Image (cartoon, rainbow, N blue to C red; front, side, top):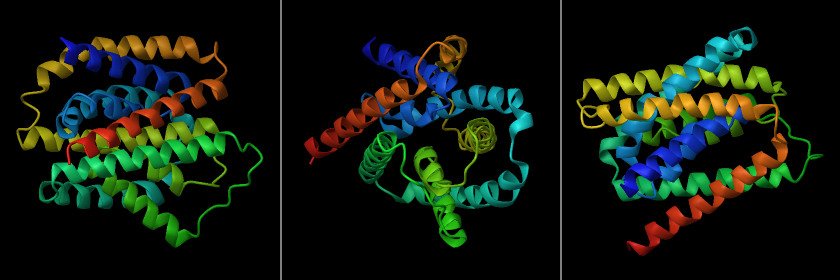
Length: 247
């Protein structure tokens, strides 16, 4: 019962946040679900669910997609990186993956919080080669634990994309990668035990999307984003503490 409540809560909170402010639903949901589930098991449930939101956002905001950036810079590097991550995954101990995931969450949340309180800080774009390496790394982390967002957001630092373009373009990236990951889970038979759970959570996702869209024009996005980042940082610290306590 507790497991179901945490899962429903994680999905509803994460997808509401994404629909409201365009902030990574999968990273938030995974970090919350990983408090009560093995990370890999959480992936099998949450990655297929993300296809609903990313597909909806890709379709709704399709006119804002930066096609050249998507096809020539983001998708090729992300796909190659994800393939590397998927190949590496079986060879890496689950404890190491849990440590890496917690570190990624803490780094992303703390960096984003610092930037949120430095509104006048000028962010310069990375050199082209570094951007490619970071995007490749984002693909690797997505293949390992379906969390390519933090590194990809960092890779796009200083690109001066407006919010709608950024959100629409990344939605296509997540729709593409998560569709492929879900197909891989199906092909390898790892989705069979989670399939009924995914179906049960679909109404939760739809409800969260509707509520998030309603919330979008009724909140202070900046304050809400900061609160979410603080929650994410605390969750990352709890995950890290859980890892330490297992030593």
